[in-house]
Length: 181
Image (cartoon, rainbow, N blue to C red; front, side):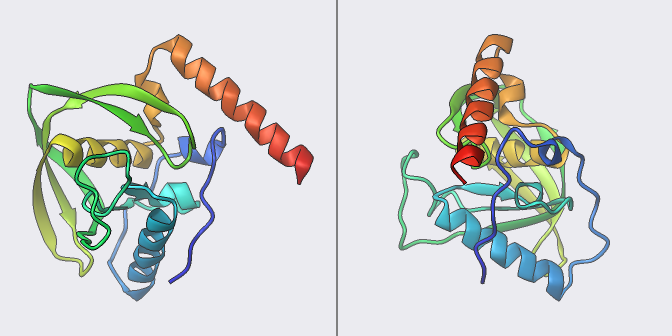
């Protein structure tokens, strides 16, 4: 498996919609394996293909082994999820608020309100259709990653002032990195 470079905001690739996947094949499984390795190496709990520059409707998650920012982290346990062409087919009226971060926005966080529970239909690692009933952190993670597939990022859910502040900070950091590199 390979650790892939993560697309860092601001980058127009993060704002593009991803295309549906025609078939789950060995090449796609290799991409999903590499995405999972990249996510683990970056201490994340979810990663969309667009975040590694691939505009396909694919995401990987593992909230059990994920970030130390969340309760319940246990590196000895892995519960990876591979979602291809995910679609939300139901959501609760009850909302949840989590302080979200994003591997494409390193070091930046904001409180985002989303439905507490979602039902998601998707194809798994082997191309079989599945239905996931998620709540709490898993529901938040699924929705966050699915936003990426539609060209949305978590800062789009923040106040305009907070969003602009994070984007200015990201532009400044990117310029500084380019000047140093």
